[in-house]
Length: 225
Image 1: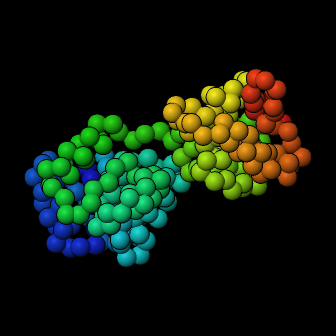
Image 2: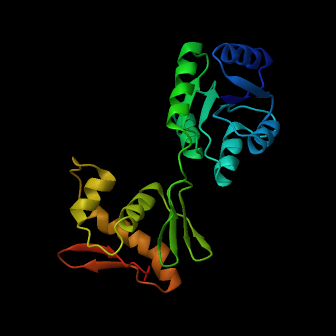
Image 3: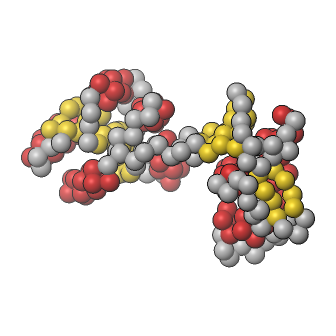
């Protein structure tokens, strides 16, 4: 199986190439993000080992470009940045896993083999209700041709409703599905976020997609309103 290593530290890149070849892999190496993206687009790989801090294009941009092109080859991010938000950004960009430098080579090989066993995950389906679309992979929302900016919590509430479009969803179900089972704050927080969503995805477009059923909950119209 062929792997792509995109790493600008020449000694590390060469060490990874020798070690992985000793494990039975065929390995291509790119020293910058631009070349790495070109190789990834031109060849089929079982997995990609992608450094974040790269000349040309950084690892986030390379991974995003692949995912935007519907290339779901497993990506293992290699990074010297160990902050939790760096890890969050790597995963949100579309990476499947990450390792912080310095790392154990044995652990790296185990992670690579695990990614290969899982294979390339299919792109999550885009949810739609009429001309309202939500993409769980890119976390993008559109009403027709217009992009709609949502906060993380607004996105989560809308996704919950869209996955059950046409159904009546109780306020408690939304709390448990978007917040957690132990939420002990004001349950009216759901009404606040539903109002925010209406002001962003319905009213500016003259729609009434998110409906309130008194005493029962909310329902997102299948046709988007």
